[in-house]
Every structure is written in structure tokens, then in C-alpha cells.
Image 1 (cartoon, rainbow, N blue to C red):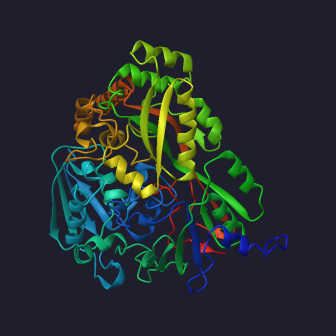
Image 2: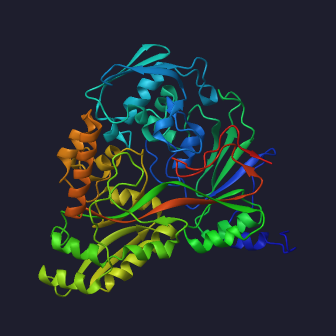
Image 3: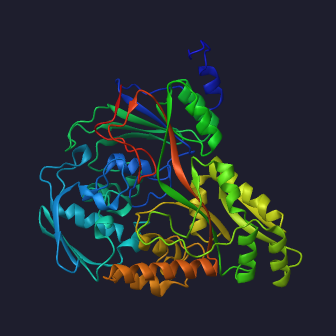
Length: 517
């Protein structure tokens, strides 16, 4: 029964939300995610918004972001209890906590596990973040509790590479080798929760890790449910079948939830930069005047109105604001001037307009943005042909270079080098042996990106990052649309156990202190 006495479960079931619940003790957090299914729980491969929160519950890094924070200046000990570096920052030594154990009886964490994990993160065959680790020369186990990392040259933030984020998560060497491909659904970490069961297209269940080194979690477990329908998740939340739900990314939803007794909206950083990446090597986008026309036809302020000012903020560059090295001084096309865009196309020899292929995820919030762009571009004679696929297929196909335009939403470790390297360095071009996520085939700022990595003078380094952003914007490798904060709804009985201002895993981290009051 809800507050008005109306029985809602049949309606929830009719919308495709399973009402069959596993047998749990009290204190299980029911968490709804906007996805059809799991992509992967392997932290070195998890790139999508639905997959990333899980990493924060199951794994630890050598250091960590404080729960609720994205401040790179306040990283704190995690699996490492202390560390030191030489004067030029090319040699780092980490001392591990003694007695930390992996889930499911896989033994104590040793330096060998750390060496294995970081080498795995640096390998493009086993990691989506391998390019981040290109500066590492070697990783050594000095003794069972001591790890030494030697760099080829100083980099902006070595601690960022070993934090509890992306490739910095530490996995069990024995479990990863034993389980092979099954590690994606049967991961083994050291975090406060461990995987119990995965039911495809339904849920992943987690149980508390009684041996967690920071203390036994207050929750008994987590049920992570896949509910792609926004309306179904909302109904389940209001009916009490969910405690936490991934939010609809628009102002109307925020206002509606905010007016509902017993529910709270959490809006958090980091802002995900929403960009249209244009394949600069694919005709007709290989013509810069065509790219300029596309950028001119896109009405960037309209996206902020569409999403809502609580969530969306203007984008000032091709990397997110707040990143170390961000610069917003270069003007960006995107005034929504259809007539000017038509003239640009005509001057470039395309008076009859153009057609562009775009593989697009079926996730509702991203699909709606793509449809807004489709309508904006149509006014200028640009036919954006959307090929809508499920989210997992979307990620696979854009990495196989099957889309001339890629709409991608991303936040990364907040140092300019990471975003610039992954999205705009030539070594990261999709379809190449060293591919990351350079969908635009951009290569105009390679020199500045590489030089900035090892530059020890902060001012010179900042100038190099500024120059890189200027070149990328002027070459129109991508069109930054807007930056979007992250919204989740929760019932008022959920207490995170910390001040939630940010979530580097793109979702609230469930810690040992999280509870249901």
C-alpha cells in the first residue's frame, strides 16, 4: 500500500519490474539502475555508467578518494598505509596494510597482487585504460608488503593511477587467472561488499564482507536491479521496492521527486562532459567546413534548457571543468544558426545537405539528447541517421569505428592528461592496436599532450594543456554540448554515512557505514 492506500504492485509488475525478491536478511539496500543488463564487473574494463558504481563497492586501490569527494588533493590511504617518492617523482614506493584479505577465501593481499593488477591495467588486451599507464616503466614487489613503481618520466598524478578508480583497482591475481572470462561476472576484490549472484537482465546481488578491513558493513547486502524504464524505476521507488534509483536526467523529474514526501534527490559531481565526437577522417566530415557546419547547427544553450539548470551547465572546453589544466578561453561553435550552417555546407560543395550515421544507445536520457540534436541538425539540411541499439552493443560498435558521430558522456580522473589522452591522442584512435576512445581520429595536439605529461614546471604544463585544447576545438574534433551533474533518488531512510558531494564512480558509493534507518 502507498500513502494514499492504493495497491501499486500489480502496476509495477505490469511495467516489467520483477516483484520476486531473493531471501535476504533485513538491511539489504535495493538499488535500481537504468540499464538492460550488466556489461562487466571487471574494474579494468568497466567504462559505462551502469557498471562503474559496482567497482566502488567491490574493490579498493592503493589510495582512495574520500567517500563523497572528487578532490584529487585529498586522496587518502586505502590498501597502502603509506607511500613515498624520490625528488623528481619517477620512483614511488608503497607499503601495504598487513592482513587485508580478498573475498571468497582468496587469501591476503600481497605485493604480487598489486603488481599483477597494475600490469593488467596497462595491457590493452585486458584493460580499457591501458593508455593511462604508458609512462610506467616497471612495477616490482620488493617484499610481500612493498611495491615499487618506476616511471619513464614524471607524470601529472601517479596517485591517480593507483586510486580506487578505473585501472587503479586491485584484483586477486589467483582469482583473475582461475576465472578468466568469468571474472567479468564473478569478480574478487577486497571491498565492503562481495558478489553473491548475477541473474542476467535482472540483478546482481552482493553480501557484506564480514572481514572488511575498515569494519563489518552495517548493511547485510545490496540488490542491484536492472530496470531500463524510467517510469518503472520511479514506480518501484515510490512503492518502496527500491531504496535508491538512478535518476532521470531532467529538471521535471528532479522537481517531481523533490515534492514527494519520503524521497530525496542527490545531485553530485563529477560533471560528465557531453560531447559529439566527429570522425575527422570519414567523408564528408573529413572536410573541416562540414564539421564547422555541424557544430554551428547544434544549439548548445538549448540542451541546458532541455535538461534543466539543476543538472546541466555550459561546457567551456573539450575536457570537463574542474580538471587540473582545464581552459575555457577558446570559443566553441554551437550557436544553433541553421542558415549559417546551410551556407557553410553549400560553400563546401554540399548544397543539397548531407547524411551522417550515428550509432546511439537506447538509454532514454542519452537517446533523447541525440534526438534533440537530430532535430537541430535537420534545420540545416543535415540528416543525422540514428541507429539505436542496446547500451552494451553501443559501446562495442563505437569502439569498432562504426559511427561517424559519437555522442559520449564521460568523466575521468580530474587531470587534463587523462581526458586528452583517451579522447584526442592519435594512439587512442579506435580501430588501432593501441585504441582507447578517440572516436574523432583526432591527432592535432599529440605534441602538446605528450610534452605536458612530463613537464615539471606547472605553468608550462598548463600552457601546453591550454594549447592542446585550443587546437582540438579549432580543428572541431568534437563539439562539447554541456556538462551534466549526476542525479539519484533515494528514500529518506537511506543514510550514506558520509557527505555526498561527488561520486567518481558516477553513483553513490555504498560503504561499510551506509545503513537503512
